Length: 597
Image 1 (spheres, rainbow, N blue to C red):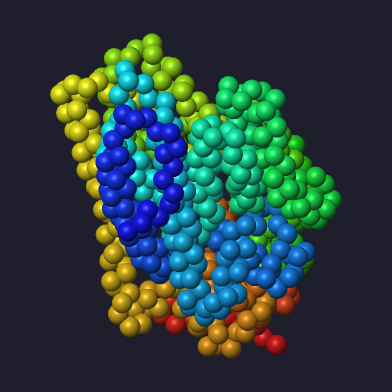
Image 2 (cartoon, rainbow, N blue to C red):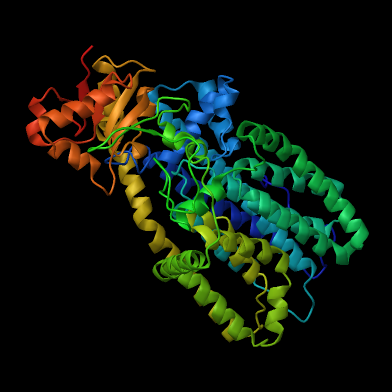
């Protein structure tokens, strides 16, 4: 079987490196690939319908990406341009659904298979980075230094990639994070190749292309790309001189801007102001300044700006919001939050900033403490560094890969300032871990070999224990869904959508909702538009609706009817209300109320 990617070892590998190592590395790496692909496919397939409420397999972000992809496919450029959600992932989803045209029931399955293909690309990209780092290590190895053997390189590298992809990014999550990880791995691998072969101009073209696509995938790549470009200049300065380095990196910069500029111009024109995207701006307002998060901002707290346009509050006690125009999507408040939050003013407040950093550091501490695989990796690194006995040379060893560590740490720092989630760190954990393992020097002693073997075995065992619960759940779901009709019976959100259509609700119909609509998948599956809602909030608006007098409930329903909604869907109702013209949707806990003509 041929190697699935080009061997990245330097053209002039040291003569002291036996060729048998290359063959062994490839043979065992194929096994790593097989395990990675099998686990990724199992997670993607097994989690298609494994949810009691739909959230676990399709969150609100995924619905927005799908809706935006549809807008691009039908050529609705005004509606497609979105300052919150970057376009590239939506392009992939929209094109795939347009080509295969799955029924609504199979739509999310097709999306999961797209995610699996992206995961396979991320695996290829990681292998490219791993080989480039290994080749760099071998080419710079001196006769007096011993690095990790290839078998341990595979153990630490692929366990880290698989663990971070399945438990931090998750193949089953409908988001561009896995694609973003693939591009980060490619960028790091290209940095290593550019240092080894600075005369190959196509590497710099590829570098700029990867950074440009990265920006179209996630807005945060724009500042990270500038860091990568600056690091590339500093890295190549020693190899070819500052002037030549700047010339080569300028080519990468030109390619990057060529890809990024059209979208920036289009986005800025649609907003009437310069912007590369509003995701950082909104997240800073939500997580640092404590502006009302996510939906239905009506202004405040003081100093956070005034809304230029809001979802319309058309009733009080309980609160009813209307948002039929001008934003599209299945659920417009989350389809384009940048429109509904136009006017918000993120501001620096030292106390709020320190509070946000402390919150994120606490999260990181808890994440590291209760993720035993990461603890095992950190412990292995500590013991290997300690056993090397290099002491003061240790800083030099780690610093040798500063150009990989710096962009990753800066990216983590950016998230640390606002909000950190495991999926945000997913691309950078493997880069940080492997950059540190590349700095390890191992003494050629029996004790050193035993320690390395023991640590490798421990990491593998902890890895297996970590992935068993997730794998077992996905396996159970995949086997369970083989029974005819079982998947549909478990898929509550599909049952709601199918039930609405059976009751006469047509695609494109305006509907209203009572409950946590932002996290519902049924509007997308039924191809309807939610135009008004009584939201589930901490203030208890839904509870207030059901506990209010009959007259007040009729007034609230009248306000919903005034928005043009044909029906009202509630995700749960009190038992006594079932006789009040509310019809249960199938076997779900959702109910529908038809408006009088």
